[in-house]
Image (cartoon, rainbow, N blue to C red; front, top):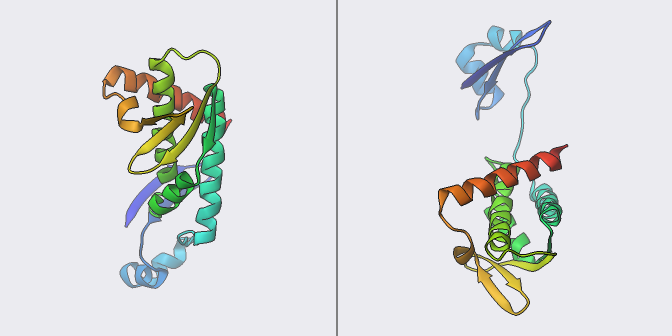
Length: 168
């Protein structure tokens, strides 16, 4: 069991997160204790159809964030396939966010390194690694994203700002 507590001006809450079924929690804590909890919320992993909807939403957000960076991105079907195959049920939408951030980092790094003015038109695809197709040129992820911590930090700040804008 993992315990959290937080306060509301009128009420106090004690939240337990567990992977156990309600019957097992009752066995561990006793029926009277569980009965005194008030609300018990049970969740389940998303069905495959729901994950498809989440992936579609993640791709739309990726395109929207790219537009804010002045990048017009076309997303290859391999991106959706990769998102679906690498979706982690225990992380939910956050596993998709991580993949979005990788794509945005690659595109914005390329844009930064090439001092690109105007709209950068990119086709994003996934083979053995992320790739951008710009005109006839194929640009792999490994050639775009540098490990220099200052550059990566600047990209992360820019992505955080974009995520904030998408939430608002």
